[in-house]
Image (cartoon, rainbow over all chains, first blue to last red; front, side, top):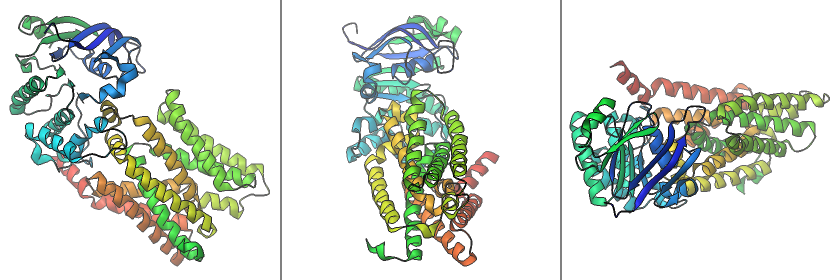
Amino acid sequence: MNNRNVMIRLENVSTVYEGERMAALRSLSLSVKEKELVYIVGPNASGKTTLLETINGLLKPYKGSVTVSGLNMMTHGRRLRAEIGYIPQDFIVEPGEPYLALDVVVMGRYGKIGVLNKTSERDREKAHDAMKLLGIDDLSHRPMGKLSGGQQQKVMIARALAKEPRILLMDEPFSNLDPESKTRIPLIIAETHEKKGLTTIIVTHETHRIVKTCSRVILLDDGRIVADRNPEEDQQTLGTYT
Amino acid sequence: MIWLGLDIMGKAFVSCILIGILTGLMGVFVVRMRLSAIGYSMSHGAFAGAALGVAASTNPLMTAMLFASLVAFIIGPLADKARLHPDTITSIIFPLNMALAFIFLTLTPEIGLTSQVANVLWGSIISITNNDLVYMTTLCALTLSIIYFTWKELFAIMYNRKLAEADGVNTKPFIYLIILLSGVVITLSLKLVGGLLIYALLFNPASTALQFLEDMRKIIIASPLIGVATNLLGLTASLYLDLPVGSCIVVVSTIVFAFSVLVSPKRRRSMTEESR
């Protein structure tokens, strides 16, 4: 593990949301090596979502630097984001949303396909593969607005996986799932992470969903890292916060 | 072109079809990208520009185009640069456009509410020229080509702009393109319904299609068809009832929208789900 290259590096990063005065991340430094599976936990408003949005460049830090794969996120953002599978928190669409589930999954590949290029049969195959993996291929031609919260969340996970990313950033990806899927999906993600050699960061408040194979669990509070350990080392500390 | 020899009514029917296609198409993007307030501001910008053209005795179409493009630039890249919320900038631009329009019209009192001014305000289908039809046809071809080549990106932005950005799509140029195209479409449609009513042509067909259909590909086809149908129905109604064309088109398209809300299967389903 120590010989691996650093995939994600944040150095002294401070981020503030537009219109807010308080920093959401405070001089935070973090390194994630390639092929690591890292869980981020912490209380509400501790900066977990902000951290993911800062890593993928959707939020610009006012201080510090973010590098992914050795490239500065501020200057190579678009190119890097095409290699990052991202699942935002609580992404539930309105009931009348006129988009089919398959279209939403294929959309994950748009950054890779490139401007003005059309989607190919291969893109649709990859989308179907990801949907099959999550057991939702039968939902391909159903409108997103007609799917349950849990089904929509699986579509979003499939979208991130169909992209064939090098990095996965997932923000509470299990929150809307039914109990059976809450057990099954984290294992599928861990398996895919292992099989594809991904670098994965998962934000969750459900510490009992953290898989045993994960590399690290980082505890965030008030925009700072307060613990960064192997999950077996410090279950008690994590328990107090979640 | 085959319609260069058409009579006034022939030109009116052709322009209803072309404008129905253009506003129906652009309306889908304006509604789905939540640019409605921007469309509203641009339609009044075009109106102010046309008023300047009338006052300055130049071609109102050119000044309307200039103003609509200027408004598109202000509420697009400039507002982004100044980090102004779209609501803020449109709330400021909209009354400014109206104020300018009234200033331009009163600067030349001898014009007053002459037919030329009325044309700008309410539209005048009989003033549509062969040149207008050529512009509209060219714009139709251009708009369809742009949508064909950039559909993938527009499709993703209409779903969710932030997600599209997260996937590596550069969303800004596409949104500016839609704003600019909407400005041009609005300007060329002024003669049909006028500056005060044009917004309905942009908004109603797309909103009607969204009441029924659950696939964006079908919506982008249905919306211009609804636009064409309501324009032709409105024109026919105005001929029979001897009422202004633009007003009749807007009334017809509003009735069609209201009816679609009443019978919308999507709406009924979501209301049933909510009551559970």
